[in-house]
Length: 434
Image (cartoon, rainbow, N blue to C red; front, top):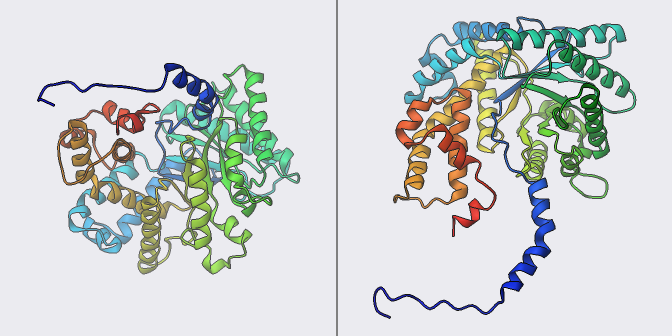
């Protein structure tokens, strides 16, 4: 065939065949859209801080930031000493230390949960009522005056019979208090703990639906996190993955799956000395959670460490190294969120997160720029990889590890461009890869 001569294109199947196949798969197409809408494209906080309901106060967030800064000043007063404790590379020492301090001054807590469960315990009804009402008032005031964390809410007691009524009442008092104070804030997050059956999730979803109807709110306005703290939430008695059923039972309201390190470990009989987020039992549970949540728009969060950075400097340094290592380990496994239980944990939370994004930033930016410009390189990336690369850069921007100016300089892309790659339309990942 001569150059420039067109190929003869021939087919054998009638158009009706394709139409028939498409018609037969229409229910599957609809099911894919419903069950696997993809990532919502919103910011995911890098951590969640739990504060007992009786301790939460108007200055809690600022207090955590100040206590974290004081810990840095006492135990790692400059970039070199902080880097030495954590084993940071020389080129990361100054930018990580500078950004950690700035973060603690500007936004020390990204997500705060006022706890009415384990951290609060059983109290007289009148006392818990008052604490729930106070939490609503303080959170509403924080959003009004600009001192709120990006995400705030409560963890109520679970849906098991002994505490069910108390949990429902606390939720009602809290949400009603927010409505009376002006409405539900955009950053509202609720956490449902100790779930064992999908029916508990479904019932909680109906409870929120009833509240929405009572106040004339849009259907589905209130979402919630499911806390995975029992073996039954991972594997049911019939051998199925319960957590996958829970996501569906939430009827689109599930926003996250949070791993409960110590309750889950204890449920499996792991002795106290070995209850940690890197235990094999923890890895198995989180892997099941991750697969169940993939594509659904539900985010997965790691748990916490109970080794607190308090006491003499050497003890603080040991706790910092442990927390930093666990956080880096989680990030490598795509668990981009975790729990922090003490103000002394947040310097190493941000150090680990900032180091993770800054050390891979230039390579990720270069790869994404080549992909966007369809230029060559030593790695052939596909649309799915471009999605991962842009998601990586967006997470770095959201938490403060990266600046939009440096990302734009190395990629030639705007934030809108990054968001387009990170949340492609269904079919783009396969169609554009062919």
